[in-house]
Image 1 (spheres, rainbow, N blue to C red):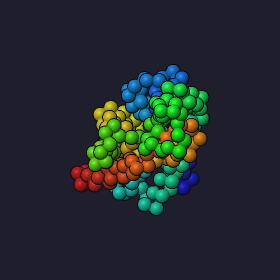
Image 2 (spheres, rainbow, N blue to C red; image 1 turned 180 degrees about the vertical axis):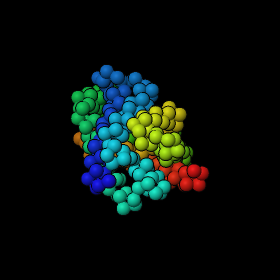
Image 3 (cartoon, rainbow, N blue to C red; image 1 turned 90 degrees about the vertical axis):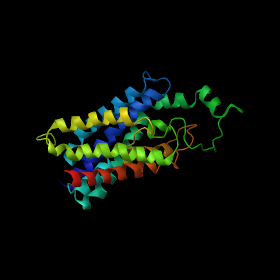
Image 4 (spheres, rainbow, N blue to C red; image 1 turned 90 degrees about the horizontal axis):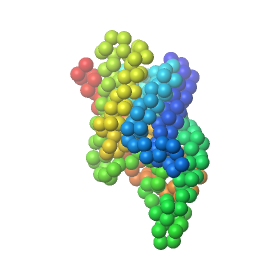
Amino acid sequence: MSSSDIFTGELIGTAVLILLGGGVCAAVTLKRSKAQNAGWLAITFGWGFAVLAGAYIGAKSGAHLNPAVTLGLAIDGAVKWSDVPLYIGSQMLGAMIGASLVWLAYYGQFKAHMTDPELVESLNPAEGMVDQTATPEAGPVLGVFSTGPEIRNVVQNLVTEIIATAALVLFILTMGLTKGLATSGTGTLMVAFVVVGIGLSLGGPTGYAINPARDLGPRIVHALLPLPNKGGSDWGYAWVPVVGPLVGAALAAGIHKIAF
């Protein structure tokens, strides 16, 4: 596999992953969206289909689309360590492009949501306007771009991300045990189903990042975009959806080596 195959596959595949995954979050969250308040099921299935589309598009690179998956495969010996920086760099850039496309696709809805008088009043009820210098830890639309915990307990949050990512990466690593699954399009479909299952079963506590690029890339975009009244990007939490998935991937690779 050439460097250009890795770069283009991971860049475009991850961009589509975040475009569709972040897109369903925007659809459910933003005012004047036809899908507003569609709920958690819409988000989990939307992300599953996003994985399916991104993975098929990024097939020429192996369709990792996730630094945790790349790390797990490298530990397992399926990917050269020298290729790991290219994989992760391409995934990060693709995630940032995808998040920017979500903003463009929902530009009118972002504007309507962030300038809605009810939202503005709720952010600063005393004056009826927002102090633009204030930076709350999580802004009102940060969930469109990145994840956040329902209960802020970094130990629990970290453990949740480790467990969820370990389940994902262990499934990917063990696909080779089923004849033909890893080399057919069916394998990609099964991974998408597993992502839906993880969202339904383990996504409630933290929003199931299970992918450092999926969380960090769009969080950077949130910090940079000219969104009015957007608040903070919650950098104090940002390390959890990066470290947790990487630890979970390493754990899964270790289990795979020992057990299989």
